[in-house]
Length: 284
Image (cartoon, rainbow, N blue to C red; front, side, top):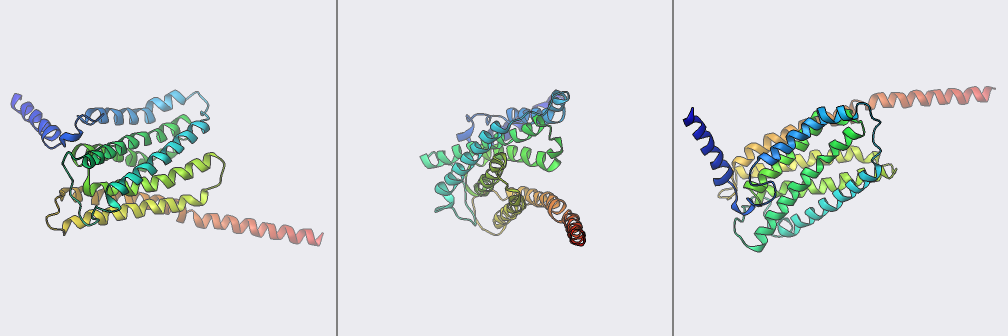
């Protein structure tokens, strides 16, 4: 038994220490996975148990001003990181076919690691969106897709910061911060009673395009020789993003395609009723 425990501890130390990038080990919440795991555990506990029990005998909170501040902050932070991703690599120096990680301690390489850590912090901030759903008693919006996506992004961003802070993997952040800048602009305008319902369909399309581009981006690692970026990431990211396309595609179909005929029938019925009323008025 002691030998098994010893191997387990040695394996944990190897993964947590030997494989990790030493440059990011002192960043907040990065030295070990336990703070991140604890946070995600509390997140699930709150949205499925603690939060609903807390709200059971309370009226939904009116969080309009808080939501506006939150959405505006998300727009600014995501736009800033999108700008950083462009200027630090993807606009000029980075190759879209294959980009190894610069593991040096140069000022630029360190700035990239800090930018990726900031992206991880924003993914934690994203979790507040679900908390707001609970406090506003919108439990119906807390779907498997919503929870899986948020938790996956948090743990994925933590893993990138700890093990792969730079290079090929940052293309995902480039796309994601761009999409989120648009998405939170839609949310902000909605809280200001500006009708942006027509945006919803296109934002979902943009998210699915994002996942497709990420698949293509990682698939390139399979045929680029001597890339310098680990090939195993493609075996993780390609199935993951195929799954996300499936989930978002199912949501898109149920929301914008399957429901459309019923909506059209309702519109047509209302139109017929209006025409009948007009004819009756003329006859009278």
